[in-house]
Length: 550
Image (spheres, rainbow, N blue to C red):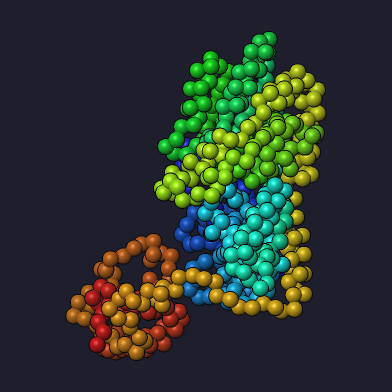
């Protein structure tokens, strides 16, 4: 099979900057398809001169990668030269939520190619109009699939589709009810089990300066109550543990990264000072951690009181699991799928139907960013992680070292069996085979449909004084005859990445040789380039007074 792989999730991360689970998960998916895919050929699209290109080229040099079956394809090459430059594709897949770009590419290919993509977030209000309605109204097929990373996500999307289908069908009064065609398939994310593995606890503790006889509880993630987890209940529970375990050395580690301009970690440390437990609380930022597996292995228990609908899976419990560290986490969304009874405990969570005023008024406050922040704050504020249940389960692990050991051993087994990157790739490839078979028996029912987009020169034709036709004749100006194109205002990144940047010099040389010439003649002269490319560069020369219409 030929797989077209898309999805640019790579970006440079400076020291102290935020690292999100989304970026890690999506980038790991690209890695895993390079390293572990059994498919015949992978054609990976990239944008030239961006960090994505360097990251992909670096992956190709890895000893695990069979570079003979991995092909890097410039997105600009396809954009300006056409998708026909690709060989016949059997699957179009994105490691992130590229539903509309994928189906647009398929329409351009005019072929029954299954489209699949992995969903990492569904909690933003704008996704109703930008994602879910298009999923109903655009030509997705029964041989396409949304890959949901947890059962809760799959059920949530199914529920949202049913609600929107009802709204659309009642509003439009259509004769044939609209119903989503795309399949919803659950495939969990995975971690690199060769990297995340049990390490020597004493050695790891020495590296971080922890005492060998401490009972260490670790939280690791994004420092944000709005987009990850409210950590106050964790501090409260830890305070109770300290009061009731005075004969033991307890330590809470809060580790991770946070958005530039925010200091939720500092807020948590101030709260620890306020309740008098700051000497038992350590905060470690991501750039201070050489290997996350060493931090996990230094600890006795991993915990995460997640309470946010932004979460769809949750990689950190699985990373801890792979390192043989028991988990005490919220009974929430993807955590419910990953943390088994033999590896740790789920903490009871509760919500109530209390968001109707917000859900039905996505227009106030009028500032979009403030509205988003308010909605996040009210959602997080209304989800309760049961502190009594939380305390009891952590206390149980403090009291029973044999239970911790059993959880530790089972954790490593479960991670290897169910949550490796290899497992994620294997399940995805099985899905691709199924979809490919379904598309093969679709009786060639592919129907071409233009995906709604801005048609710039048609939609905005009333803006300029005139729209020039291909018959328009141009000639060089006196300025153009005495000035080099290289002296014009240049944009280096454009010149480096877009091949038509070389056209102005060619066109100018041609015009100086032949005198006046029509736009259509120039198009024919440089037929190796697309018609639109040649027209744009003619207009560029006209804009800078190098040529003029006759």
